[in-house]
Image (cartoon, rainbow, N blue to C red):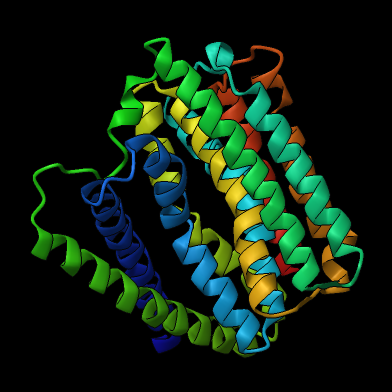
Length: 315
């Protein structure tokens, strides 16, 4: 019982520290003169992926590669099936008018690149560089697209990155940064140690615990954001949140982790889980290209598929 409490505590610390780091980093960047557009595309995006990044790096350094890859593959699967499925049960998301085609194609490319690199058996330093180069290309494209839209008077919301507060005092910015930088490794270490202990208690592998407990935990911020987007009828926010999160998981989290430490690939992942992740990614085609709305029926289908996947993995 205590290990479950430690895991929950580690997750709460991780999520709160990630949020604190985003707020501190965003306002520090704006205070020192970095344009809001660049802050939105880089600082916020990296900050919201900080929990996954810290978990993955810590697991790789502690020789637990199953949790590193399981976390990313499981999170990406959960982001599509659970993070879009549960909000759709609450309210239909009108995704027919969302323009996410290019971002979605980039996510599919990122997924295929990630799977291709998996077949080399280990994510090496070179693999990490390849993934980070793809990330840099994606961010460059996003920057010029956002700049063009802003020049035409569109997307004025880019001027207000998530967590921005023009009136925030310096002491508050520093406090947020310190809490984030201390809390992230503390929460990651606590969650990781308890997750490994739970895996041993139930006789399951670290890879499975990464695909389930750790993946669901680190997907909670995306789930909360998407539920609110569904309630507010902001389907573009919901889809964009999932696509952006999955891109950063594949390219940034694994890219940075592989540069820091090699990540051996569990052969079991190549037999089943990466294909489920890819299949979940392709399930977005009707919403991105065919102007289908994410209705409650789709919510039942997506959520049901995720429950089936978790049941299969655990058995």
